[in-house]
Amino acid sequence: MTGEPPIHVVFALLPGSLILDWAGPAEALRIANQCLHAQGRAERFVLHFAGPLAETESSVGAQIAGLLPLDSALPADIAAHTWLVLVGMPGRHIAVDNAPARALLHWLRGLRPAQGQLELVTICAGTLLAAHAGLLRGHRVTTHHHHLDELRAAEPACEVVDNRVFVEDAPIWSSAGVTTGIDLVLHRIAEVCGEAIAAQVAQTMVVALRRGPHDPELSPMLAHRGHLHPALHRVQDAVSEQPQAAWSVPRMAGVAHVSPRHLTRLFMLHAQVAPLDYLRRIRLAVAQRALQSGLDVARAAEMAGFASDTQLRRAWHRFGVPGTPSAPHTGR
Image 1 (cartoon, one colour):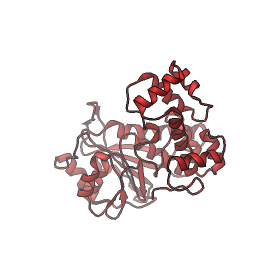
Image 2 (cartoon, rainbow, N blue to C red):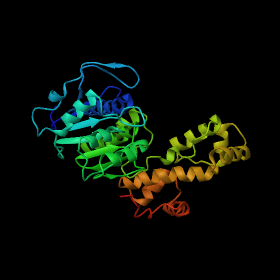
Image 3 (cartoon, rainbow, N blue to C red):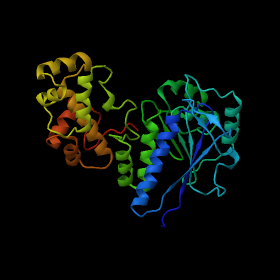
Image 4 (cartoon, rainbow, N blue to C red):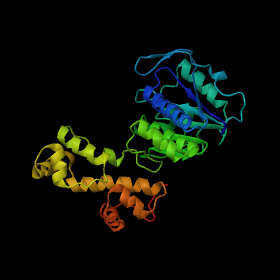
């Protein structure tokens, strides 16, 4: 198979690295290779795992062995397209005063990220490592909401963006935390391999709604879900999975196995929102994502389950969404 040259993806792992920060994105890249191979296309991603120690312990205690030394982690050809991935560790603050962290920072300080060559991808508090290494000066970045002030203190010369799933400022891509690393890698897969491959990866991983760089960190899909009522969660799951279906309060009540009147009481008591308003908010989130991907208003309305683009515009205005469907506010 022939095609574009491979992209080397190097995960730099310190002791205690959050396993989902790197395992989720690594699996997404593996599945992307699998999908490309099935189409007769060349695999694009070569995965490497490196660190200051040859063997270390992950955040959940599993031992990770066979890590490459940092000084041999990157391709010998400095022009080779490479993504260097930095990930977070547990804790309210990221400690960089231990020997492994000092070794990683010393190595990072010698690097010069450049678009199309060595690009930096930070996941969760991995952005703090880049900040302490002096790689973020003049860039727009984000990190987990627990570490935003810590990031501002570590690198005052960067612009810290809060409440975003991820931020693009090539050659640096940063994400907010844990599962948002998967959102970021899916976005990058779409850039490199096309939207169709990224969609296949998302479907294989059962990622129901891919989020983009201008989506809030706290997705509308997660709003009104801070309760423990199982029947209500069943309804919200069903609506989120099929927002375009012909939902009504009686149909939602059928999913919960309660009467329509009782379902409305459950929504107001536990979710603090009426059932049909919840449905409209979910549909709005889907429509916004469709518009950001380049679809026109009519197609976005159809995909989200609105009867017409007029109905979408009414919901957009009712819920105070910035901009208009024809010119949505991106949050840049």
